[in-house]
Length: 373
Ligand SMILES: Nc1ncnc2c1ncn2[C@@H]1O[C@H](COP(=O)(O)OP(=O)(O)OP(=O)(O)O)[C@@H](O)[C@H]1O
Figure 1 (cartoon, rainbow, N blue to C red):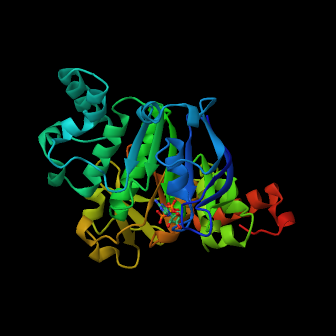
Figure 2 (tube, rainbow, N blue to C red):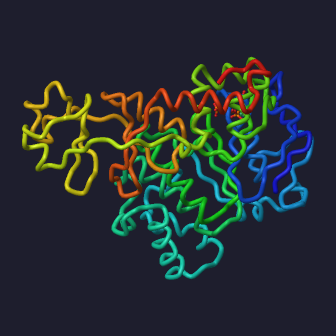
């Protein structure tokens, strides 16, 4: 557990504090995200945890001890640090970069490198990348190495400062999922800084929204922040489509899955096989979806190259947001549901999903609070 108690940081020469009277408990083994617009004190707050920055007043406790009484070198050794520019040493190989902190801690070279090779695998990188230099990796690969390096000494706490903001959105989404996967196994105490509210709600068990002037505006679960922002600042920061994003926290397994007509490659190739209803779903030999075949144009759609591309897929266990997105993005209006192997299970319909959402809203009595989903 990390505890901020009335922590203020004022940098010399500045009129207003960078962090203003911050009190906050960070749970062990969970991901806590600091989010907010630029300059609101997120990085300063993060760096006070390992004493890279010293508070002007107030106390920070780490594991029940006042951090100001713990030697900063000890603190930093017990906390991995990952930053936006991966911070890798350019003239050292990837393996040597990962092994840096264990080597400083006195771990023999062979052992440190063997552990580094294991960590490459943990963060999803191929073994052969270990002998490259950081400049020979993509931005996303460098960030993974940064995470591996932070994990190398097996610290209980990871501090992550905008670690994924320098990579493109697709790689960023991959890295976010990787971090969640890693966290399921490792259960580290992670403090993660971002200015992106989507990233915050995807990753955070708890989210601290900071306002300009270093004030903590709201500290809640992602769901709580999306459903009930405490003030106009948080509502504005969370953005217009918060209602839609909130669906990401509602389980999608209550949605009825209906059968759908599928056409395997042999059936698709035979124009005499009719499309009953408005659309049929073309699938490959393994039952995985390829795209839609409209009844109206059946005769001209006989190969996978001719099908109408499908929308997003809804997988078992995913949220109502994913179910609704599958239905809304599908050219047929039917959202395709697939099993863990990617095989078609059936379809969901937007109208039915909206009905479920409305029922859930009424159950929660949100109408009473006047905040519509
Ligand atoms: N070393 C420093 N000396 C003086 N002022 C600083 C220093 N570091 C940060 N500040 C100021 O403190 C305030 C908070 O900065 P901080 O980097 O903590 O915010 P942030 O929310 O992490 O911003 P960003 O998302 O842009 O990184 C800003 O006004 C910044 O200019």
